[in-house]
Every structure is written in C-alpha cells, then in structure tokens.
Length: 252
Image (cartoon, rainbow, N blue to C red; front, side, top):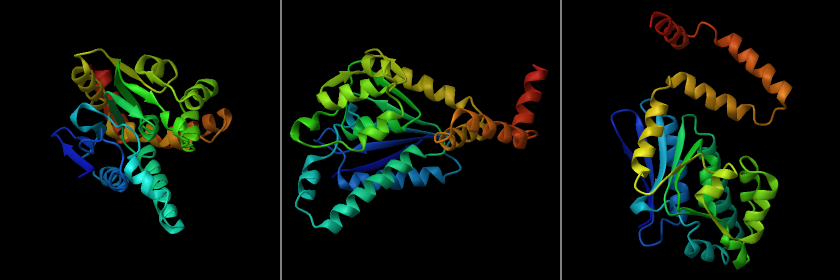
C-alpha cells in the first residue's frame, strides 16, 4: 500500500519517505494527504532540525499515480475539488516548511515530483536522474508546474521543458536552477550526508529565520525586501543565539 513514512536519527534529522511499491513511488491520493500531514508534524516538532524528502527503493517519484488520476476524471465535482484542494495544501506545507528541507533525488522526478523538488531548499540529485513533464504528451496540462518552476527556472527554459514534454538529466536541471548539487555514481549517500552535516553546523534559530525571511520576502521588490531585512536585523540584535556565536568566534 502506498503511503508516507518518517524516520528520525538522534541528531534531529527526519527523513520523509515516499512509498508506493511497484509504481516507482508515484504520488497517490493517500500519499498527498500523508505528505502534508508529515510536513506539518515535523514543522511542529521541536526536535527536528533538518528534513529530507526521499523515495523508497532508490527512486524519488515517477509523478502522479495515474490510477488515482484516472479515477478522478469520472469523479463528481465535489471530489475533484477536494482532491485539488488537498494538493494545494500539500504544496504549501512543503514549500513553507520552516526548517531546512532537502530533496534527495534518485532515478526519476517526473511531473509533480519535479515540482516537489522545486519546493525544497536544497536538492541533490544523481547525475542520471530524469526530470520533466511527459504527461503533456497524454493531454494532461501541468498547471501547477508553471508558478512552481517560475520560482527557480528562467522562463524560456521552463517553457522548453513543459511544452516539449521531454525529460532532462540532472546536469541540465542544475544549469536551470532546479537542482542544487550533483552526485556522481556511487557518491550519492556520501554527498547527501555532507549536505546534512553542513546544515546541522548552522544554528537552528538562524536557519529558521532565514527560511521565514526568504519566504516572506518573495513577493516584495528589492527595495522593500532590503528595508524588511533592516528592520529584522535591528529587532534581532542581542539575540542570545547570535551573542553566543559571536562570543565564541571572538574567543577562538
């Protein structure tokens, strides 16, 4: 049965696993609800410092589960509304997650999985991973992909990817801003561990403030964002975490 699983380690790292055995972890209706619930749970968990989104059995996610999507085509309007409202709610729970969020991407990240990668803060991908929206060739319009990818990709690169329905590998995805880091064959686990170590080296309060400010400033122009940053810097002066860090640096 498809679903979402959470594993935790003693350092405050939580891994959220996409699981849909035999279907390349395609995102089912059940997983949509489960992913939102998992992200909300970890957002409120004071022990969680970093979250990783990952697929079971060496595959990130092959897109939307077409079995569930096919059933939705004949569903009554209320059911359609509820499902798409759930998708939107899941989107915001992932994108607005208040702590560092890493996508660990292996083999496939197609359709909505490409979008999920774009909602995270850092994405590390095997060099052979395939990204794209092949569903356009089946008459499915990926509406949500457009506002999502506009956050991370140049307009023409985004239109090329979505209109063509082609798939691209991780190196090209990195060129366009969709992928943060590449992992050569045989190095994925070590590369992921390195990213996590870097994030854990940061102070939790500072990392959460960065996330919050980045999200809040997205809709501001440069002048307004700079003014907002100044107000926050003034208000944060004397913060115990910062004072401790500065004091430790000066003593070193």
